[in-house]
Image (cartoon, rainbow, N blue to C red; front, side):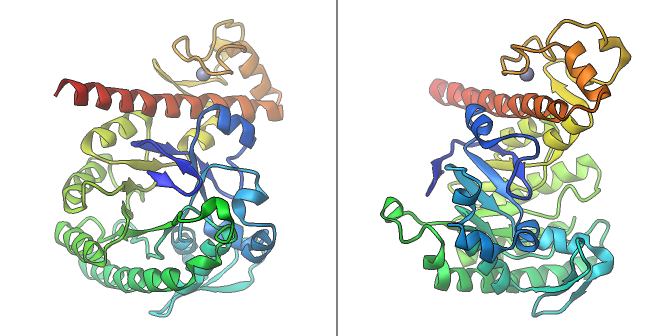
Amino acid sequence: MILPHAVVETPVFMPVGTAGSVKAVPQHLLEELDARIILGNTYHLYLRPGHELIRRMGGLHRFMSWPRAILTDSGGFQVFSLNELRKISEEGVEFRSHLDGSTHFFSPEHSMDVQIALGSDISMAFDECTEYPADYSRARRSLDLTLKWAARSKEHLERHKHERPWAQSSDFEGKTPSLFGIVQGGMYKDLRRESAERLVEMDFPGYAIGGLSVGEPRDLTREVIAETLPLLPKDKPRYVMGVGYPDEIVEYSAMGVDMMDCVLPTRAARHGLLFTSEGRLNIKNKKFAEDEGPVDPECGCLVCRRYSRAYLRHLMAAQEPLSAVLNTLHNLAFYLETMRKVREGIEAVAEVS
Ligand SMILES: [Zn+2]
């Protein structure tokens, strides 16, 4: 993907930078890990520090000093997670801030305005993330709303895209940010098909499969991905939101998924759960107390090259902030390396055939 701020090789795993920070990892180390694209959360940045402040600071890239690509979500997922705090109409969603209880309103147009102010390379259409389980009529209504909102998102962004903070800079002449449509439809095959077909008619530069990783069993996630992918154009990026474990991101890549994101590697790291070539390990485990070996002997990351399991275990037990930094660095390195190997595998196969 050739994006305004980076060239991104796919399939790609995107670290999640919720509030303008991939938790515990400074931006220069993300560069060292060779992350080319990270996520920003529209809902969180809108509430704090506020998208207008970020616009005045030159946009999210400049504010957080991240020169590479950023994808922003629509805010829909977070707003709809606030179960008790929302009121939905066709116009949009009224919700109360989880920070101070203040009332806010998000519509497709407002979500686009916030994403424009942040200046992301890829914006996501405002959607209603259908919960699981949802009965057919509920999934149907939710899907209709999401389709209407996708059209409104597209129209509004088209009209206002020149308002991005970096749009006037000559460095970005001819470089266009993208808007992706999001397939919903619950776990129903025909609804997923309808959602995909109608989004493709609207002609987005990329498509996401949303409404997964919402508590459904893993077999069902795979099934919905397998059924939905062939309905989306092969020559455009296909993004599955909110997945997954290391073996899942490999599996979904093999199925044809181009982009994925998940808080798992960063969140798990802060809880001491580390991913390795030999499976998961819990660094808090007593058996690592005097283990001089690296987290993963197969991993060449800057943590594995330098620190022992014993030291990482100690940092966690002593609640040293460095614990979160080092654990997260390793997990992200493991995820990004996993995807690098997948891309190499794809290239090798392409050369043979
Ligand atoms: Zn490592």
